[in-house]
Image (cartoon, rainbow, N blue to C red; front, top):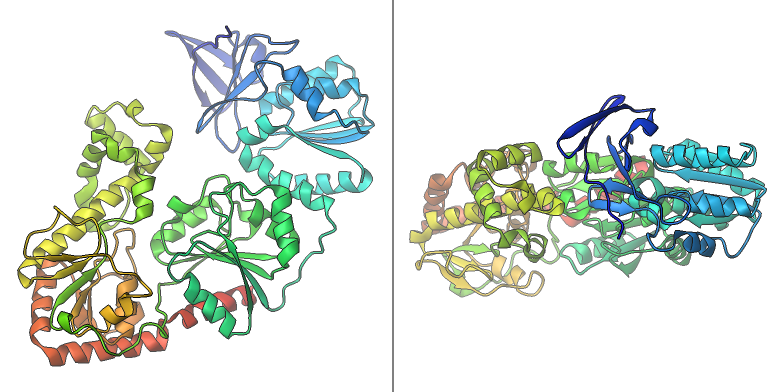
Length: 587
């Protein structure tokens, strides 16, 4: 049985320390041979620290493992790496592009074939040195094989791939799956570019948007945006959402060749696959890629799918989305508040049984949240940490940082290892999720004596008996009539939004009905001072204003009409689509 040496590493500038058992061993970064047997440490510019572990020999070469955020990745098979390398090269050839070199088995097998030219790219400084040594031991000339270490897929590497493909049009591209999966941020764009070079795909020069590819998932506002695009004479082609799918490089190009759009547009990142091949394909072919975030990008975008060079457009429903988009790699980020479909939500006949009532439409959480936090909801330690931060999150509408959470874990003497790495990454959002539930429950309890009606699933056992709980209502089928009713609506904006109010004030406002909403910084920007009486600072003021409106029909009518005028003039889906199109056109 193959055993690995238990190791812990710390890297600082050009020095590396290895802790083996209880003893420290020191070695200079460039002197790998002095490191303890079986342990290698080297820096990687993207991951900051690169942890490598060398297994005892399986064949003629050892096998390397690299530690990633998701655990240890073995670059080559532990069972028969030589045979795997032979399989990759079985179709022969005289010139090769190697995307990933692995532990050396692929390079060793390639040398047996004496190719005319090879361009090899590795994502690891250690693997680069390892394969260079293999070439030197075999007296291979650098004019025959070019080996490059890529820490980031810059223009330089794309240029080298293009030049090589032009010089050797019949060259074979070999993907070392183990290394490509270990360093996806490096190899996914390079893989997509190599596939692009195989095709005679003309570079697009979009002057005017005439055709939109619109991947959808049946999410609200998708049909509304599609309708607005069509009303402008733009052809809209719909596809199933690419999000969380494994679209291959070839499939990404096939989709673009088949539809030939000017732009891929989506709601909540549904125009991107988990590897970012669709967005990379767009950037290489000159097709615009854009999305409108209606939820936090942190929940919706994987770390490996986005980079600034793709030129992605991100329109954010709230300021809370700006920093995550920039961190994740979106190049162009612009604020775009929520809005209403003014053709669907408009004044008219409502439900008589709701006249003079206080109404809230919404469930305690979204279905996506339930799935996203499924494992954390089974751990009492997660709820303990959430409890520590809930008051601060409610007051400031800000997620705690991972550093703050780790400090809290230490203070509470909670073993961090009770969470997986993925769960640690989700803890800030879980804290927000639990705080938001408490926030909405507390607000509804504060107005319980006004006998409000709540439409939504999952409230059982959370609210006092004075509150009537009715079933969930469908956004398109049931909600317009409900919002037309002569009642007072509650907003209770999700805590992930800290600048603008949520959808309710736009939809109910378009129906000329008043909506009580939190006094957020962006409220005045959207609505000015004309409906200032609809905004409250705390639950006491919420109760006070709700009581006044419930007793005063004339005031309800006046504020509802003013809100309707503002929404119709500035905050419809038509306005937002115009902003999206004009922003892209001006760039």
